[in-house]
Each structure stands twice: as structure tokens, then as C-alpha cells.
Length: 280
Image 1: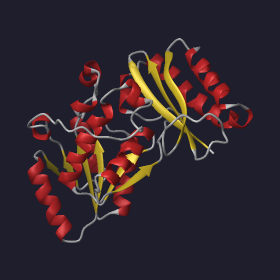
Image 2 (image 1 turned 135 degrees about the horizontal axis):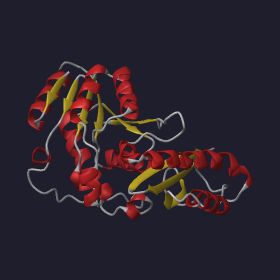
Image 3 (image 1 turned 180 degrees about the vertical axis):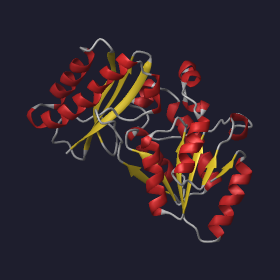
């Protein structure tokens, strides 16, 4: 495995690989790697000749400075894990390398970023778009891999690729969970033992909602999910929305057109976790 710290050197290596006819699978990360990230890398290895990852805690997508400061950083362990899993190349730039000057670009996503994460984390998705486009320009992947836990981010990146005509296939990969159901997240490392135990109520409630959907209206189900989680003194729901899987706009009835996804954000102490469930 070869590690690059400068974007220019990484780009030159990718150009050489592309000219030789290699396909490149790319997994962008912010580090603090877990089994969810590794599952993305495994998909990249299966579907491409070359597997590439990046590790960069992107400051422009944090609208909360405390969250940026407290975001877990475990670079040495991350690199060792990627090495063991057979990653070919890793980009590990610092902030000056990625942002030698302020990035003033503003992206438009229609209504995709006006709801849920976009509503509660203003500017977040513009920061995501800034770093993703920079990384795509450097790595020039044939395919890029993103987890479905970040469902709204996935939809926005798909639109970004379409609108800006990036020749990249966006591959959506299933959410990876702990044995007790909690969705894997780098932020889980910040949970206390008690908070970790109580956080499992999030996924348990979503799984229950999936089963109960046929017997309740959307309004009833939303109220039940929020009440169940808020009844736990360790948890506070920021939002729970049932949305169209394409437009991300809230749906009013189960008869509305299109697939439906329940997306949730919950505060567990000072840690904010997101998750979702697909309704069939």
C-alpha cells in the first residue's frame, strides 16, 4: 500500500494507472475507520483493479466547531487497517493541501438539501460537495462507494455527479450494523458505556416502525417513533421524517408515489447519530 500526502503526486499516480487501463474504485473517508468503511473497500476491490481510499477530516462540512474538534482521529490505526485489507493507495492530505485558499464555490441541489440534515446543519452539504469534487478531480475514480446510512448525502452526491457530469458511478452500499443493531459510525467511539447501551433503541425503534407501517398512518408512525425514543432519558430526537427516496421530500400517505425512507437524527448525550430504514 502506498500513502500519498500531496494531491499532485496522487493525481499523477492515478493518471498512470488510468492510461494502463486500470479501473479505480474509491472510498472517501474522514478516518476513524470501522467495519462499515471496510465493507466499502471490499466492494471497491471486487469491482475494480485498484482500490483507493482517502482520509481527511473536512472542515467545511462541519457547522459545529466543537464537533470538528472532537471528531475522532486515529490515523495510524486507520492506515494499518487499510493495509491489512489490501487497499492499494491512500491519500492523506492536510487542510492546507486541500484548501490552499478558501473554497468559495456554492452548489445547488434543488430541494434535496433543504430538509433533514440540510435544515439542521446549514452549509453541511455544500462542504461535502466541495471536498468530494476535489477528491474526484484528484483520484479520477471509475466508481466511488458510499454507505446508505448517510442516505441524504448519497442522494446529493448522485445529483452532484449528474449535474457536473463526473464520469463516476456512485455505488450505494448497505448500512453495516453492530450485532445489537446500532449503525456503525465513527461517532460511536465518543459514546459512554451507558450512552452506547441506550443508543440501540434508535435502530430497534426503526425496525419496529418498518413492521408497524402497514397498520398505522404516516403521521401516527412518526409520532410513535419520536415518543418511544424521547421516552429514554439518554436520547433526544432532532428529527424523524418519512420521505420519498428520490426527492427526499416528506410524504403524507403510504399511497404517495415512490419508495419511502424513514430518516432520523438523535442526540445521545453530546453525540449526534443518524440512521434510516427503508419502507417497502
